[in-house]
Amino acid sequence: MAAIAHPAPVAKTRKSTRLRHPLRRGSFGLLVVVIAVWSLFPFAWQVITSFEPDRDLSRFAPTWLPIPGGTLQHYRNVFVAKDFAPYIVNSVIVDVSATAIALVFAALAAYSVARLPLPGKGVVLALVLAVSMFPQISIVTPLYQILISLHLIDTYPGLSGVYIGLALPLMVYILWGHFRAIPKEIDEAARIDGAGPLRALWRVIIPVALPGVVPAALLGFIASWNELLLALSIMTSPPRQTIPVGIANFTGLYSIPWGDIAAASVVVTVPLVVLVLIFQKRIVEGVTAGAVKG
Amino acid sequence: MSSTSVASKTSPAGPPGHAERRHPKPRRPGTPWRQLLAPVLLVVPMLAALLAVSLYPVLRTIWMAFRNTSLETQGDRFTGLANVRHLASDAMFWKAWRQTCEFTAVTTIVETLLGLVIALALFKTFRGRGLVRAAVLVPWAIPTVVTARMFSWLFDQGGLVNYLLVRLHLVAQPVNFLGSTTLALPTLMVADIWKTTPFMALLLLAGLQTIPPDLAEAARIDGASAWGYFRRIRLPLLMPTLLVASLLRALDAFRVFDLPYVVTGGGPASSTQTMSTYAYNTLFSGLELGYGSTIATAMFVTELIIAGVFGLFIVRRLRQEA
Image (cartoon, rainbow over all chains, first blue to last red; front, top):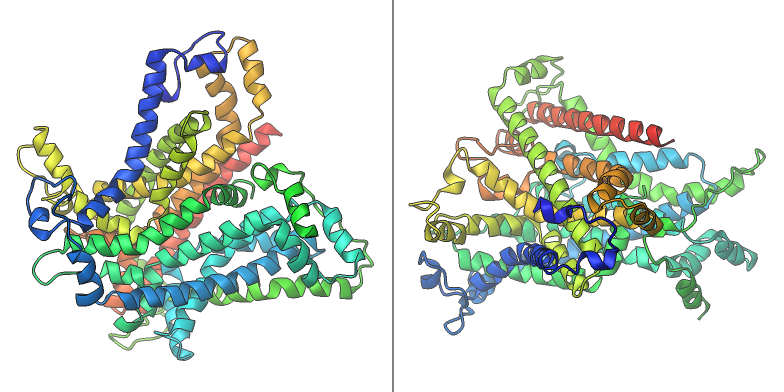
């Protein structure tokens, strides 16, 4: 692998000719295929597993493709016998509300830091960065106690409020990176037209910085959608629990129900994978703006 | 619409940081407070949320680290360094600490190297590059809990990995990866490496894209070999990105919770117990809020040390460049 990654010296060749040698080309092609298979195979296997009947799963020799002989039994189990739908509903309510509110807070703050004469910008950004490094476990007990005293434990607003705080740092960084790249003349023009800061943000900055707003929202949403530790601690009763808790606690009576687990995994992952693939380019730009340029 | 025409004119081709950086000039000393009112008010909601959800809780955890608060014994008073002394002699804590450090070191190093290989490969232009870039994002989009379940199944005694190992005659009997005190932690590392290498590759790819292409041309005209070009130009220029990216990875790996919680529950024989799972068990099963906070604080301190060491490297690097 190393030899492929750092091609051996080829003196005085132009880049286009470097890959022309058949052997070199072949090994580069192989590397690319290995990367793609390594990335896709484990989840593909989960998808295959979700369509295989239990008797095939319990055999040591795997069935590579459940065609024919595939079954929807596992999906039926997930929604009928295991009643998985409430987890999805809970997750959607908590994560969508948290993402929407966090996005508003983050946009206001990033706008102020990037484009307005805010005193102590450096301190604000350093604070945001520091907060994003706190381990969840070091905030969970006080959050639990606060939510109990506010009667918000085991409620949607309780967990959603916590997720707002978790999503904010990354969102602020991504939006800040995009907002400050916009030429100054643009909001000056808005100001001359008599627009206040809020109006300039909503009418001018947000539309221009849309390529940054999309990944900020998506990354915030993914962070909440995937969060386990806090959801486990704050949603104390099963009817309120979110998807990660549901999947973590998925157990069978006698043996591990691999097929049912696979079906549940596919149901909660496919929407995410589709979203990520649709917004692929913007996510890459957004992540790198937030993390590398900071 | 005027806004869309503006958007198309300014939408950056690469990461937006490429565009000129603008730092607003410091205002004249006589800035009326009215002008500061709007900027300050706009950051208030964010600061309030961070204060309530992160800053205050962390400070309170540190405060509780020195108390004997327990829902079991109903104790709740200041006990000075008693918890810290207990921590120092707590064999389980040190086991979890060691295992977490091991996990962090191995996964961060492997993910950085693999991420670099993938980034270098995806930097080249080839047919289907867009598809491969998309494929690489898939593991990153999958919830860690799902990753945990996937790898439990792959590495199960009746799972695919064992089938392949037996078929290739690498082992005689299926290996009980997750039931073995020596193999369980490495299996979790594999799952983590699979899930987070893409993130690493993306960050490094962005770093590669900031290297001016003229440098490659100049190096080639000078007759530099591909390896020489990598060694002397790409790697040094990529170093700051490499350091920042591995810092982010290391901090994240150190908090690892989902994988051991779901796959092994910390077992077998605590061989996959991490700082987060040990603190969680102490807090929520043992109901020892004081001592659990001490563990969480120890973890927080270790994270600060990791960040500090990386910070030192990064600062030194930047000084060298200046």
